[in-house]
Length: 316
Image 1 (cartoon, rainbow, N blue to C red):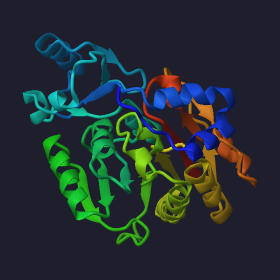
Image 2: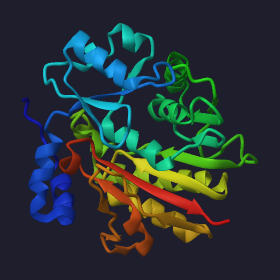
Image 3: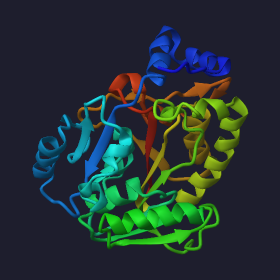
């Protein structure tokens, strides 16, 4: 394994959160990430049959991911990600290469076939296509992103995976072109500093800084207000990031609670997934106690990427 340089500020801030367990966390940060796929039941409904076929054909040791029914870890250490994306079955859209933690936000959103869903920062489409799968390709999904290049990837994956209930829109998320629309559920998988993805991309550490974290937090606060504002009364907003900093997670949720009436959190419990509660204060700031219901998914707990998910409800 190549040497990975972890910034001193990064080590120090997570020692404040984790104490002696920080060493375990840092060890997992530089441990290679397990590869995983999601079988796309829109195109191949019998996911167990396809999993068996993939195992027999390619020699993959597939282990079910407990929190999503058609998700599988690939336990073979010698299988490269490029190989996973270079099979006939992948070309046909029968499965999608997706990290296991990335499958959690749609599970928390729990989309139904009759609902109108907004995926606010959708590209490249991992969660959009998973939501479509969970809706049995019914209802409607608006998939938004700011970047034309990313929207090209989003549209490619939507088409490849056979999703017929998705419309794509380009906006910055804050100035939405559909402000008069109201959605049953909104997923905001927010742009972030990506601390949780270090295991997959060690270059994340080269651009990491506390100032970058704070910059992202400012943008996320704008996005979460916009996401909440297009939600129907009684609707659900799932806010998630693949980063672990309190500024980008609990502080953003706390900001929403302080600036919008009727917002409250629901505790997340998913069988087979180890979850820790949110942090109710950081660097001298005290957050609303509701943020303890934010789900922290640490890489050392589930041998996965780091992820944080909040389930926010809008009062009727």
